Amino acid sequence: MSDNEAFFQHEDPDDATRSRAQTLLQSHGWMCADDRLSGASAALLIDFLRHQALTDLATLLPRAKESVDRPRPFLPESSTFVDDPCRVVVHDPGQKVLWVDPKRIFPSPAREFEDKGDWTRPNEPTDFRNEPVLGLAEFARRIAAERGDLSGLTELLGPEGEAAHVDLDAWETPLGAFFRVNLNGNHRATAFAVLGAPCIPAKVRWHLGPFRASASTNLEDDELLYSYRTLLHSYGVASYPDPEGIGMNDDRIYSDWPFLIDSADTAVESLAVMEQVVGHRHSSPIGRLPRELFDSADTLVAAGERTRKVLGRNQRWIETGGLRGQLRAILSAR
View 1 (cartoon, rainbow, N blue to C red):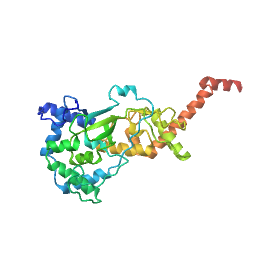
View 2: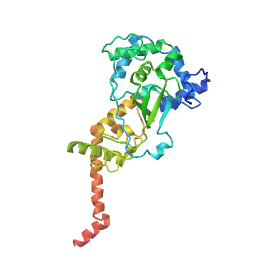
View 3: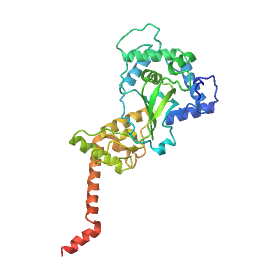
View 4: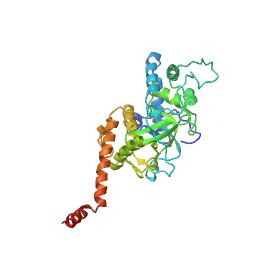
């Protein structure tokens, strides 16, 4: 999309094009804004706002509360090392405008929701309250009440291809992409998610890997992290430079499951949140581990401890010369 090309154009894509765009958004969570389906994405949003978006505050309030209270998953920062070349082929590591499913957007961890009313219209009188859920529901109602008015959408989401008003970080996973607000967009993105809108335009920066995870702070935490990360490393979920090396297991991490790389606790919580977002439980193995293992942090740590013991025995067996070494020891003892 060029710099002077508006997001919301008067296009009328056919049903097959709309269906294709909707399928991509639901399965992957995003679609390029310069794609031939971009007009279909805009049409999906405008049609939804004109015909389906609810203005009933009693309905929107519980949705707003659920959005504000929704747990926030672990999403890793990028390593200070270069981007994974395999992922750069698929995703431009620079900032790019995409159409994004708002229910896959999580708020910025550094900012809490505030009750700002119609804060996008500073010239209008504002009642300052301390009711963020109510303010968010009222904001969503205002968007719905405008019924896809193009001037209102332009004011909210941006007038031109490189001027989207929602800034996101993004991570690709086997469950599709997930996003987190970076600079702007906490209230906008969440209000559209409260309504159930199919997509919004946003400026997106992909985190492609390698990634960073948290560093341990004491011996007890060391053991838990070592066991869990050894499990992931051994069964193809993530690749750590040295899962049991202190100072070496929290950076330069490669994984198709970036939200699982930190700890057993954050992995269990994050996977549950992601599955809730996509609307189904992941049924395939994660790496070479069964999905059921990620229902419990204690189970994951116990499996990691067993894996470490097996690896330790194998290492000692190799260090003593393996089978030939054992035979030599037996013969020399005669």
